[in-house]
Length: 263
Length: 268
Image (tube, rainbow over all chains, first blue to last red; front, side, top):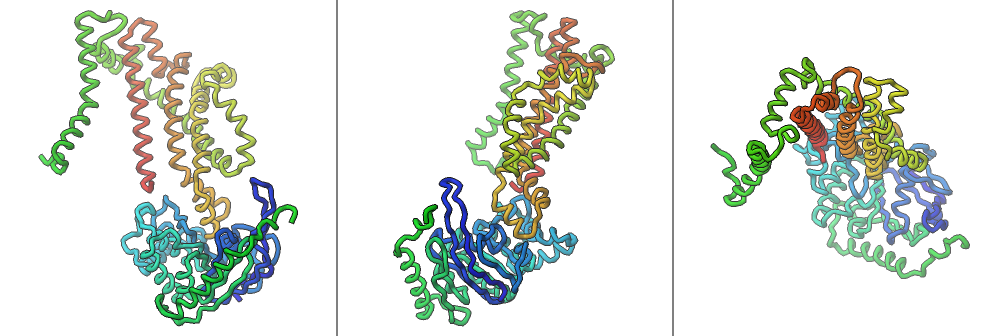
């Protein structure tokens, strides 16, 4: 297992109301090496918090998190993160953005440039090496962000609604692009999305988080061979299952009041 | 001639005229002033004509005031003072601003101190500067430093605060240490704001300098000092010529910083 979460919980104190809020409750998850795993769930269920904990951007309150069976003080040595809003450095060119991680590792400039160039070429961005992020389209920015993460060779790539702010055409193109990148690289991907179609199209497995406090309430292997046809009957069957789960979650009684200070 | 042939008719002509107006308008004012002076509307010993001022400017360059101290030497000395005070402010205010911007504790701790010292005019420090450093270059540097320091500090702090949290997190997930975040995220991210502060600081520094030079200089050079000499010998034409030099130099300094800025911040 490349990543194991054992009884992972997260509580934090709301800075405004001073109330203790339980964001995640007893998450148990084993992620296989090379798996593409999507995480869905109603808004505010803690999907993003979960990814941020795995990335080391936040601390969990209880439970364990194991990478290849060991605990890591600096998860980012194994984990890469792709943000919804790209988070490219606006003062760096495409090539300089992609090179960032290599630069931190002290790799000489010429080698960095060479390796970035390979990504730029493979990602269909020839001629954009020296452009600044403001000159790129949203889809292009996200390709740069993915390249910037991949070049550091993380074992696991965490993606937080990476295509959430793209139009549906670009979104479909980038889904196919990501699929080919994933298939070539054998990386493990944890993918948070709101988009059910996207989850079924990309994933080996889809898990669903409940309303806050988030806990895994749904898990479904997607057993359709790649490439998948978005209009096939079996594709729609999976979509329906996930939709039903989300509907059940939305209409289930609210449990969030139990998480107050007198719970 | 291939001048502006691609600009559509009327709009192009309008722009062209507007563009020219910014030169024509001041010229018209000067001509009116000259005519009024020549007709004797202005007493020449109080309000010299533009031609007198121009002659004064030539006198300042060729003969100098006091004779032998050319305008260029005064400019050079003034620029040197501003430059040194500005540089000291830059190398102290920027790092301090970045640290204060990054750590909320420091911000809370230092804000009252900054807010009380900041409204004290740099000129109010002159007595203390003289006690500490005596009259001379060090005092001047200190006064200019005070004028430049706070605008740069405050802009740097707000620059750091304006750096998107996502960028810091992205750097972290790519393996950046706190030091790397300072050098490769916070500094470049706050550069636009630092430039704004530097321009304001330089402007205040320049204004402070000339005023400070009024109160006396030891070296016998400086634009403010030169103007005070012109006053002592009752020469308003030389006073105004000196003021023109101050205005032009201040303008050129700002243009210089802006050029540098747009070159450095092409990514914006």
